Length: 376
Image (cartoon, rainbow, N blue to C red; front, side, top):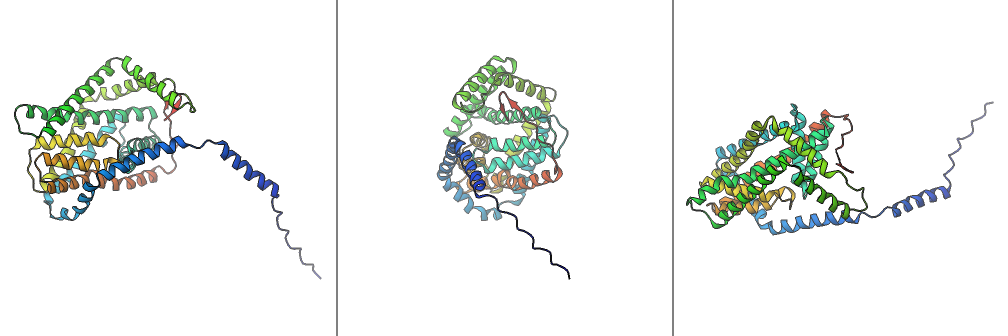
C-alpha cells in the first residue's frame, strides 16, 4: 500500500518587520533627496512662455488651419516646385553636415538630422533637445564625440551667419530708391548691422583666443555661482578654444564646399517660399520676399515656441503682406511653405529614428564629451 506524498509546504511569508523596514528605507531615501524644484520651475517658465506666445499668435494659426482646404485650388506646378526645392534644401543640409562632421557616411547623418529636427519642432526651446538627440545618435553610430560637437557647432554658426547675411544682399536695392515699406527697410538695416557684428566677432574669435577665453570665464563663473550644488565647471575657456580650433580645422580644407552648400540650402529654402507665393497667384518683388524670408527666419531662431510654431507664421505672413501680397494670399502662401518646411519634416522624423534604431540594434554606449567638470 503506497503512501501519498505530503503536500508541498507553501513558502513562508517575509517577516512583516523586514517589509516595513524596506518601505521605511525607501521613504527616507526619497525624503533625503532634494526636490528638483529648480528644474520644475525652469520647465514651467519655458512652457508658460510658449503658451503665452501661442495664445498671442493663435488668430494667425487658426486662420492658417482654416485655409487648409484652399490648398486644393493653388497652382500645382508651383507647389511641386516648392516641395522639390525644400527637398533640395535638406539634401544640402545633409551634405553640409557630412563636411562638418568629417564623415563620408550618409545614413547616420541623414537619420540623426531628421530625428533631431523633428524633436526641435515639437518641444518648447527644442533646439537644445534636438541637438542632444542628434548628438547621441551620431555617437551611437560610432562617430567621435568631439568631432560631433565641433561639427554641429560649425553647422549652426554657418546657418546663423547665412540668415544674417541675406538682408545685406537686398539693402543696396532699397538704398537706391526701390519702393519698400518702412518696416521692411528698418528690418533690412537692423539685419545688416547684425550681420556686420556677427561677422566681426567671428573674425576676431577666429584669429585670437582672448575674447573667447573671457567669455568662457564669465559663463563659467556665472554658472558655478547659480548652480552651487552641482559639480563646479572648470576649464571652459580652454574647451571653447579647442572647439574653435576644431571648427576652423573642419571648415579650413573644404571651406568652398561648405560655403556653396550653406548658400544652396538657404537659396533652395527661399525658392520653396517663392514657389508657395507663386502657387497662390501672387507676383511680388523678389527682393521684398527675400527680406521677409530673412527676417522671419531670424525670428524663428528664438526658441519661444516649438519650431517657431505660430511665431514664424505670424511674422512671415505679416511681412509678406508688406511685400505686396493680400492678407489671404499671404496666409495661404505661408501655409504652403510651412507644409513643406515644418509639417512634412516633422512627420518624417519618427520614421528616420525607427530606421536608425533598426540598423543600430545593439549599439555601443555613446561617447560623452566633457565640458570641464560637466558632461555633455
